Length: 70
Image (cartoon, rainbow, N blue to C red; front, side):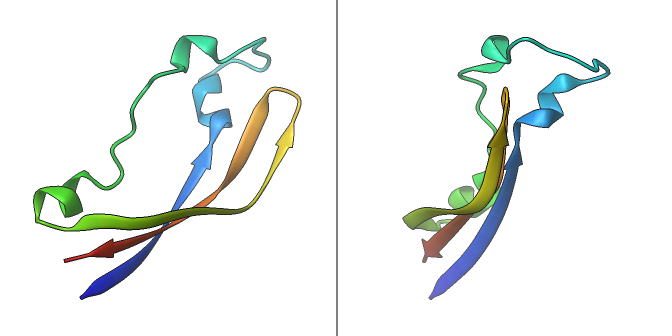
């Protein structure tokens, strides 16, 4: 059995209540476990593909398509 999931990522979330931020370097290495519940339930990642999105100045956003299999 397989599942197709999409995950939207946006670095603007790290801005918090700031209007301007020079960098998000303090957030590098931060792990966001979007798939944790599936993986704990025995699903495994088959493929990950990026699609769409944009980048401007210090911010980036886009989608990941993830195929899981059990």
